[in-house]
Length: 244
Image 1 (cartoon, rainbow, N blue to C red):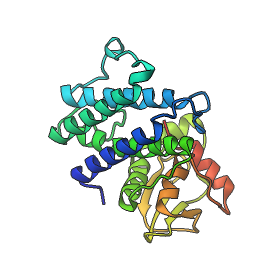
Image 2: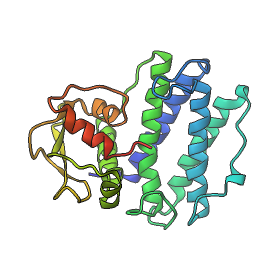
Image 3: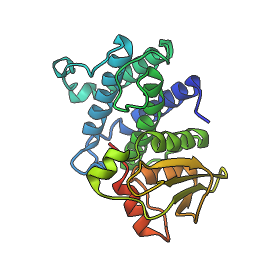
Image 4: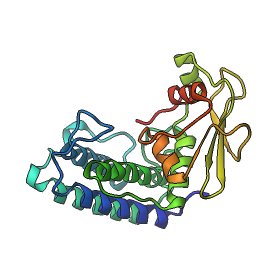
């Protein structure tokens, strides 16, 4: 079940706070899964992400904001404080907004502020993990938040029929993800090799990847490795889904 708006906002705030704590006094560290970045670059990136979506939501934009409007990167001494202000403003804007209001998003299937609110949860949670990993500190995510982030990814980031044709790839069989700590599974499949990838709740086939739901979220975003008996199926899934 999709998280409520209040739960999404609480998760964005919680992970933004955790992110700020992890990056403070650690701006020179490298970011493992963004190898060209140090933590300062990660802070600047998430600050820009928050500005981008906050602007779209606040102004009800039907196209991305003009590049000329993008704020300059804050001075290094102000990076964390600038991030914190922007994160708070994002939560405030989304909290006051009509979640059904139409706006531009990158996902054709959902062009409303509710999409922004839901997607920013995993943006904050995964980059919080990046920051904590760089700092050598712990990271946790609430199971219901991680489960919803998995479902949001499967709903929005799998290849459609045009992607399948362009990539000339398909799944050789169902891919089943199982969260061992909350007794939940998701099955990704195709009705035929030229069709869009879709998902359904439950395990409809042999389990492909399993682990705690937090680890499944990190696995989806390439931050964690989980064992599988079907590595070729996993490679097919990776090629037919986008973590951008």
